[in-house]
Amino acid sequence: MCGLIHGQFIQVRKLNPSHQEIWHYGAWVKNIQANGILLEAFFDGEDRPFYGMRLEKDDRFIELYFSDRWYNIYEIYHKENGELKGWYCNIAEPAMITKEGVSFVDLALDVLVFPDGKLQVLDEDEFTKLDITPDQKTRSLAAVKELKELFRPPITLRLDSRN
Image 1 (cartoon, rainbow, N blue to C red):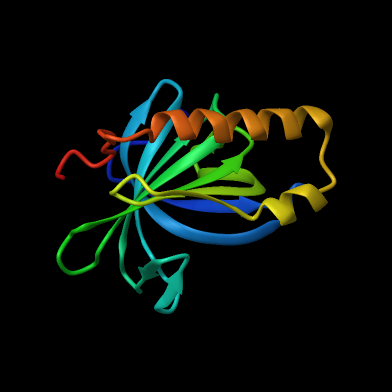
Image 2: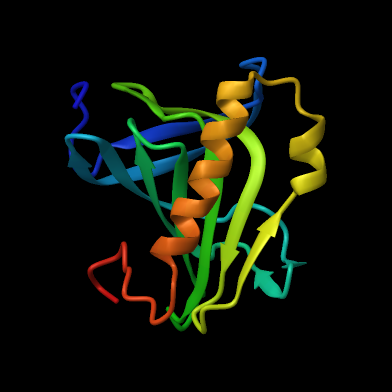
């Protein structure tokens, strides 16, 4: 896909609905699929609580981006013991995957899932304030519904084949 190869270091760019970059970081290509890409990255922010999960600098993220779905999925592992902390899913336009990296337009809604199946939809207030099209709103809400089905307990999804 787009000349990317396994092990390549690329940039991930999070864009707002106006296509302005709001965050970027580096990641390594783990697998390339016809409709997406699997990456490995490490959390580069400061340690902090996050809706009942603790994010720590250097926690390991396995990230799956799709070119044909309105979400991406991050599988989060503890930096030291490798324990699965959960999944964080961005509701976003399908990812743009090029030889330079991955870009996605974030549409505010997020789904956070814990290993025990507890699921939270985040940032609904922010989503309602976005200036997006009715089609974007419809596809975003459909993506939340799809993720709720995907993460219905018992959760068998694992992005990282090592775990």
